[in-house]
Image 1: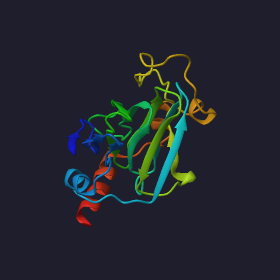
Image 2: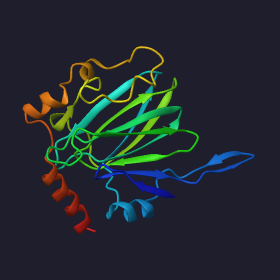
Image 3: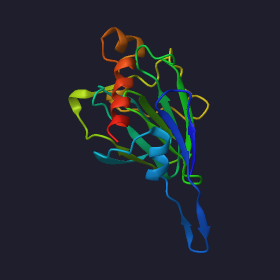
Length: 203
């Protein structure tokens, strides 16, 4: 398993080795030892999610109140998608910046986003599947969103879309990053760092 620490604090890319043969293929997109070595703590599993998306569907940008927040380990077992991590933590040196990684069923890369980070993706094929390992269960009162078409964020959809983006009504009506900040909805970077340290100290 190859691990790459991304520029946004708390985000990592994991690339497993695949083993194809005459029967098909075997791969382990999540490996606990590699994860713990990279992050300094084992994964906490509160819920698994599974989504299926048509071409040009955008989901996100989603994030949760931290603490407890909701960390996510995501990979694409079918199809292909452009996964985007957005730093929405007020006070972070990379606040408002994003990183994009292609996840697909060819290389089976995975991305980990620590609590407090924003997450979105664009499906690049029909029937694209996303698998999520989440640190906590869904908490409607603590879940928030940023409009993925926020022009100030300028997320990298335009070069990847085949047609018009397909969004849920909730994501289309979500506030911009600036509006969410003004309304006090965004996580605090220092609070997030304290939370990350508490996870490492608990091991």
